[in-house]
Amino acid sequence: MKKSEEMKRSYRVTLRYSAKESKELSRLCAKTTCNNLSEYLRSVSLNEPVTIRYRNQSADAYLSQFIQLKNELNAIGNNFNQLVKRLHTLRPHELYTWMRSCEITLLMISEKKSEILELIKKIAASWSSK
Image: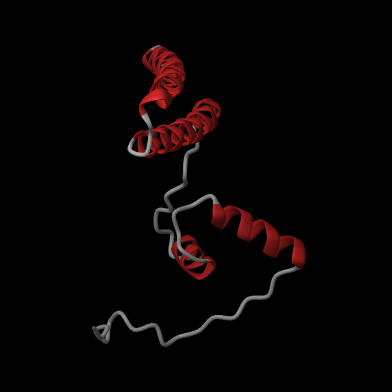
């Protein structure tokens, strides 16, 4: 799709910055929703609004816990899938061992579910108090 003649950017402005200034500009740009430095500088120089990203630091701790729980649940799910595949190849006398493995896996799933629910309650309580 071609840009209209109005939207074409054919004029150039060259600015020089020190290394320190350049790092500061990059840092400021990284905090915004601008895709690149030129977009950020264009918005600032034309006095257009620049959207700053907001990061909720309290949610970061919860997010890392959620990621860890997700990984653990994935591992438990993989183990359970392997147990079910094994079920199809079992002989009758191996059935008790298989059932015991399933019970242990289901207990682990139940514990992780409880951890997730507790974490969700904490997040809900902290967000509702704000």
